[in-house]
Length: 305
Image 1 (spheres, rainbow, N blue to C red):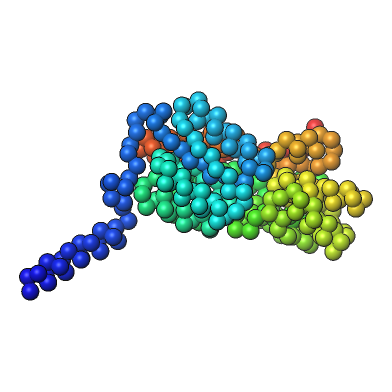
Image 2: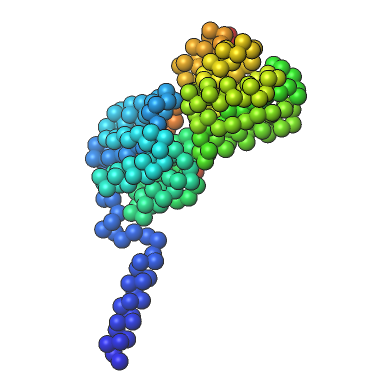
């Protein structure tokens, strides 16, 4: 009877330990006082987009200035690859994870894996739906969408027909930019067509061609990023129509297109600043300092001067 009681107590303790949300001390990363000993993992959604290249560069520049190591991995817009990439970074013993999610829901499992062994996570530009994130460093995407809609109303008036090129379904930036745009557009414009083009220039071209055929009276287009906007411009030029196009990001190609009069405007972000702020916030977390749940990077509407 005594043996049975001891066995039951042992099993109870084991189950209690397994159910604890806190990782055992041996599994937690060792605290490092010297910045040169800190290893940071950066997972980027895609490096086939100038915006995220600038974001990576901002991270690397600040890391170099601080003397910390950064390992960069490119998810290539593949959620499954990104999860594997982050798991690999965890296995390599990084002290901090910076994640720019391809999909805000899908990345949650990887965030939770980091949580389970006490590795802090900072997200950049897009959030994670589940798991503990120390902070999200991003532009105010909702405000940016509102800025785009307000500009269309200001330039073309109310009730004009507009189209919307949406980003990757499931990405928080897609939801937020769309939400901001519709906060204004649903009251003052007629959004007659919208379709996902996955933040991709080639898809932006193809989707815009299809939208123009089905909606010949469109007067303006809001694209959730500059890459899709630039693709849309190619389709519009081929159609011979005069349609206002507004993008989001402020990448070099878009700024040049605005100067040349080919693109109307872009809601410009500062991806290099987002990268810098993410590194700084992550280091503060490692030092035990409190950081805000959201760290904003300023936006501005860029038009031809």
